[in-house]
Image (cartoon, rainbow, N blue to C red; front, side):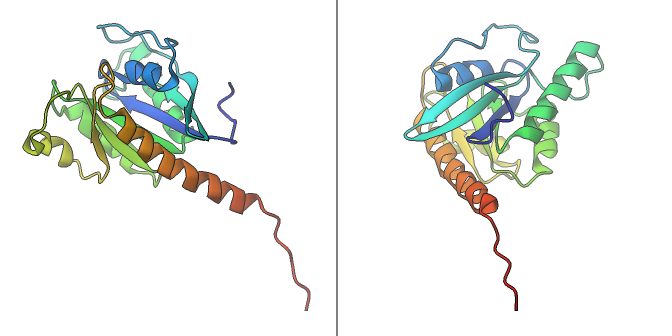
Length: 188
């Protein structure tokens, strides 16, 4: 599947290493294409997969861990790959780990994705069974209006994420159709 396919909305999953991006990718694409491990740096390049929700199709992009301030060459390349995925996407899923809490790198990533007007959603992973809204106050403090708690490993919250993607995906498709319609010039 080629990333320039514009017949479907492109959705990038971004976040720090080991927050569950590849697990979410596998769950949404119903594959095991993204390798999952308990150590950072396994996902280095972007992985593409197809996500179908009802009659809509999305191109889902799994990215490596985004650590923009790390100076190691491989980590810098992973950050570049993530920025490219953000640039080519129509919708951004910003994933964080509830168990590890809000990290300064999360705040930096939030600043990076805040600079565009694309639809975005914060996904707080590994939040299974947490019902108290106060437990998420740090994440709400980033100022994004769309926030979903889920467990990519257990499937909790996935339907809410799909509903979000479906609502924005349909709006993006409609705007692409509108832009591609020929314009008639009237002569007076």
